[in-house]
Every structure is written in C-alpha cells, then in structure tokens.
Image (tube, rainbow, N blue to C red):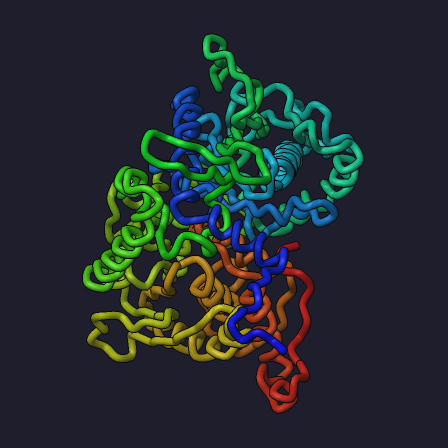
Length: 554
C-alpha cells in the first residue's frame, strides 16, 4: 500500500539541470558586467593608435565601446570551414575607403564560441582584404594597358603609372595580393581558400563595385592584424601605423578565450564572466541597446545582479515612450549628402564617397535632416528609418514599409503609401506581395519629378529590398528613371540584381537585406514576364511555383 504522506522526489534530467545552471550564469548583469570589463581593453588598444577610426562589426561589436566612428558587417558564416564566401551583398566598401583616407582602421568583434577570434576576423575579413587587393591590382593594370599577371602575388608597380594623373610615388612599390590568415588556420584550409580567390575577384569586378574609388583612396594594400587579451605588446615599441608597408585593419577581439564561465568577485558583488557576452543579444538583452547601455553603464554596473533586471526594464520602457513621443531612435550609421554617383561602372576617380561624414548618432556629431536618410545617387530615391521620415527635408513622397503608421501624415494623400511589410522569417511572401503596389506608387511619383523616401523600422532590410525592386523595375542600367522599362518586363539575371544592390549599398552603407527578401525581389521581377502569380492555389496547397534562384550572396 502506497503511503500518501510521502511525495515522489522531483527528478531533474541532466539536460534541464545544465540548462538551469547556464541560464543562471548567463544573466543580464553577468553579460553587461562582462561587456564593461572587456570595453576597458578596447579603450586601451584604441589609445595605442588614436589616429585610426574605431569600427564595430555588427551586431556583437557595437556593445564594446561608447565611441565608434561607424560600423561594418562581416559575417562569421562567410568564414566557416567549407563554407568560405566572398559576399557581394555585404561588400563593406566604406571600410576600404575609410582605411585609405585614415591610413587604416580598427574593427571590434567577439564571440561566445570559446575561440579567441570569431570566424569573421579569422577568415571573412582576411578573404575580403585579399579579394579587394587583387581587384585593385587588376584595375590598375587595365587602366594602364598592362596585361594582368598570372601570378597575382607579383609586383604590380609597373601597371600603376599615369593612374588618374597621380604620381606613382604615392603608391606602395609592391602591391601585396597574397592571402594573410592567422597562424591557427591550417595550411590545408588556406590552400582551399586560395583556390577560390580568382573566382571571388571576378565576382567583385562583375558586381559593378566602385573599384576606381578604392584604387584612388588606397595607397597601400589592405592587410589584417589580430589583437586579443593574450597579445603581447611592448608599449615602448608600438609602431606608427604609417610606418607599415600596408594599410592595417587591426582586428580586436576584447574577450578572454574561454568556453565556460569564470566567477569573479569584487568588494561588493560576485558575478560570472562571459566571453563574447555581446553576441546573440536577442537571448539576453531584454530590449536594451548598446546606446542605452552606455548612457546608463555606470549605474547598471553599480546596482549589482539583484537590481539590474528591473532597472533595465525601466530604461527600455522610458526609451520606448520617448521614441513614440519625439521620434528619436537607437544609433545607426548615417550618411551625409555628397555628390551623386551614376549607376554605371565608370566612376570619376575624384568623386569619392567621403567616409569622414559617417557617424553614429549620439556619439559623434548630431543628426540633421540631411544625414538621417541616404540618397541613392541622382535617382531621386532615398532610404532610411521610418522615425526619421517626419524630419527629412526635400522629400515629396513617402513609402512607409514599417508596421507603424507615421504620426503625422502628408497633406497630399497621393504622396503617402503605407505597406506594413514583415520580414521573410514571419511571412516569406510579404515583400513580393507588396512590391506591385510599391513600384506603382514609386512610378506615379517619380514620373512627376517628385523625390521619394522608402523607409522601414530599421532602414536596413525591408526598405532596401523594396528600393532594389524599384530600381530594377523603373531604372535603366545607367541609373536613369524610365517608366517604359516597367512595360518591357524583361527578366533580370542574378548578376544584374547584385549590381543594383551594390549601387544601393554604396550610399546606404548600413544596408543589410536578408537573403530571403532578396530572393522575393528576384522572383517577383522575373515572374512579371512569365505571368505567374507569386501566391496561387498551388502555393496554398503547399506547392511552389516561384522561380528558384541560387544564393544571392554569391
């Protein structure tokens, strides 16, 4: 007979026990305190080369300093073993231009994977440097009528004379086109990456990227250097960045390399150090952003583990109310106005993108009507965040792609259209379903000579994808508006889509369109000619008649 007074002991599986311990160690306070401790190292390294601008590799890197010049977006997945890639959807050309103008730059990133450096620093950025160096070498050879050498690592100073009427002495006498990887990457992996370099270089050249401007800006080839907490630096022998025979990209990983948690104790609190705490912010930040954190960093760190969560909740809620009332928002890379570019591959070498105008709101400079949005050359089309729409000057019409309506609508109803588009993770046909209305609205306003703003919540994904569809449907290869193009409805190639995306990213340097949204744009533009709808009965039954496209990222 069972004794009713005795309760069965609660058994906890190993999985649940480990998960419970991990959640306890991975608390909000532990993450913020770890970020704060690592940021001290970032400050120390940045002081060694104060002339070099500090860049955050999104999104993890943005947590590790209150003072970034701008941001970049090199994905670790492009450097994963057997998945190496040079992504023409994320060219980060503004980094090369900035490095050329300032003699180099520092990039901050970290990882929770227990490694000293994320793959974005170990392989993605080194691949990027090598491909850009090769493309620049090829461009200079073509510009001077010299045959491109079969050996890309050979001296290329003989094909750089008379380049843009600039004396050859301004350039490095040896242009290094070799692949530089850290010592922990094996020779076997390096060899397999090198086999792909020629193809990636051709992809860059075919994409329509502004190689001329990079060639004019960079006097020395790009080369990565790696610095972590374990790097030994003799402070009395720190070399000047200008003394190197290359343009340095100093890659700083501020976290200690550890796969577990390290308990640390101060005079007031005990807490657990988390390596790469800024990574995967959705899992721990609770709505807190890097900007909000650094506005309240000392207060949050001083409160300790017990009061931190409630304080963060208060900060996030107050910021939400503030944003709703005043239209302010979290930081973003902004671009001030400059001379327009054409969409052609021929670029005037003197008309460089002035990356000195890049800033992060709240850190350097202040936001104005002119730099809150990015004008796409001379197309009369701009892209930006919805919360900046009401402050934008010289805007005649607005295409709002965010879920929220504008607080103050334009007087002319024909000058405003709200299309609540969601990302492909929530609706894989949201962009393609709304593109016909977006293109028609853009056409009606552009034909009248009106200037159009396409905006979304973050100005980085959906609005970029919609702008891409508008450029493909209404603009010719030279970047000129021609409404007759929409009537021709010719199919586009993967290369043409890349070229238009590169054009957009040249101005909207914080653009980060998702692959799913890019595929929707590609499928819609090509489906117009075939006459097939993107959502049919077959689609509803689980079958797909959408044109399949290979990876847009290349």
